[in-house]
Image: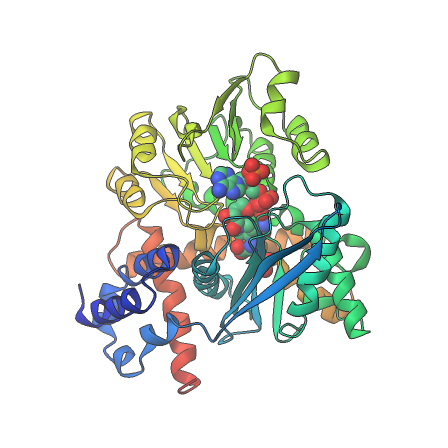
Length: 450
Ligand code: NDP
Ligand code: 2IT
């Protein structure tokens, strides 16, 4: 490996040795930049790699709140303001019991590259809490969100840092967060959060955007590889949250058959094709468990997840879409998918595929749509929400959807062109890293030592 890359990676591994996911994300990007660094010796002089691996600011704070029984509970809140090079910090908030500094930093690092790929003026950030929303009442969620925002409001603003949703944070949570922000600031600053409800400044198609965007990217990828389409293909989709549901909706519109979906407890397999209306009712309306699907559809099967093993990847499919969480698709699962004839992987989640699994797919000619590029439709539509808020104007659903589709196609060609320019064939994973990196490096050089 290029000496400069190795030296910086070693130093990050030393400094952040306990941050497993963050190290993984940096390693994945930097090890794909070999040929770029060789061509650009000036990047070392400008300390580009060192600066990109160090967040501009990391904030950690106490979130005290009172549960329905009157107990005081203390959670930890985070916001990483990773890079403001090309716009205000932008990225979601994750509420999940597994959230820690490493997870927030890996998500923030990925977000910087993703946001650069959208071509829109947004920097990168991420935040969240180790708060577990499962089983909490609406009032508990509201009190938690109000306490979280009481601290977070010191650090955000519509031209400073603009949070949105991620795992465990959807329209309900964004509503409570926005209400508290507005109350404290005594001003309506619509663009301070995205993913807002349609009644108070949200954008049409933001709910659908990440899932739809993933499929728009993949449509272009399939078209560019032997003119393939989604029609008649079988598709498995892990997760059954925001990203998974709207990826499913779009592939169904394109004539594919979704045969499996999951949640953290297990997966359902319905060889006749999943009834998405029922999934929406269980997950979006009732906030239930995916297992309930088989009560209403006894011909479907349910497989429980055990010991961090995701049974959904054992199912034979043409296309697999990991849309749940990081490192959910490992090398063993990759081997099973390849043995079962998978042709393409689309990463709806952030860093869902382990590095050795990605390498295995690429070595076996499976197309991989990389997360940073393929799931950028959510944040791109968030940026469109911000611009509507600034204009005090709303686009129609069709207008936003058309912009999203065109952004996703452009992102695909950025990845493809970079991969071809650096002789990496159909390695769109490296292509995405390189295209984003070059844009950020350029901005860093032009802005001096900041
Ligand atoms: P949701 O909270 O709406 O849904 C998450 C889904 O993933 C649920 O089905 C959940 O199951 C499952 N899941 C979460 N954590 C785990 C875990 N540790 N193990 C197994 N399953 C798990 O989140 P989103 O759909 O918004 O996010 C999904 C992924 O997409 C995340 O990686 C997120 O970072 C990424 N993403 C989201 C974007 C957005 O706009 N929302 C944009 C780009 C990427 P359960 O209900 O059992 O917890
Ligand atoms: O990972 C992501 O891109 C998101 N969770 C969406 C971020 C956003 O600001 O819309």
